[in-house]
Amino acid sequence: MSIIKHPLLYVGSKGEKTLYTLFDSGANLSCIHPDYIKDLETPVHLGRIRKLATASEGHFIEITERVTLEFYINDVLLSDEFLVVPGLSEECIIGAATLQKWRIKLDFEHDQVIVDPKAGKLQLI
Figure 1 (cartoon, rainbow, N blue to C red):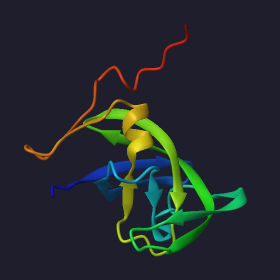
Figure 2 (tube, helix red, strand yellow):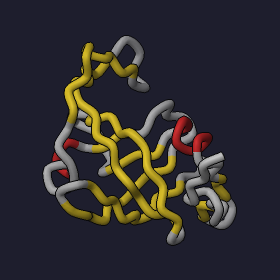
Figure 3 (cartoon, rainbow, N blue to C red):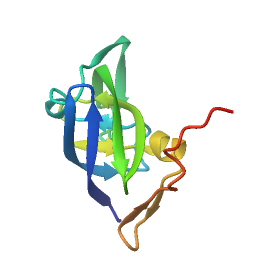
Figure 4 (cartoon, rainbow, N blue to C red):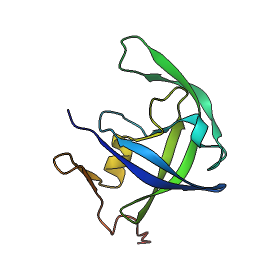
């Protein structure tokens, strides 16, 4: 089993911070550990508590907050919503929804994250 973990620069309304980020195609959504948001962004409370399933059968984590952050991969500016997950084992996780949204490709053989440089360019059509 291969994993890809890289430092990424995250930017919010309060500042910026480099976080070691796990790219996890097995995680549906992107997540961040609560200890790292205080210097980045003010969390938004979810309308309803969400229960996040874990790898342990029958074990769920209650999620009550989210943040929207910008982040850089290979100098390409991207953004997405991150669930604030208490007890998360990583600083940050980029999940499948974010990977698909920005068409990010993972090259496990070369430990690389590939982003089309056009991905971060906004277009009004």
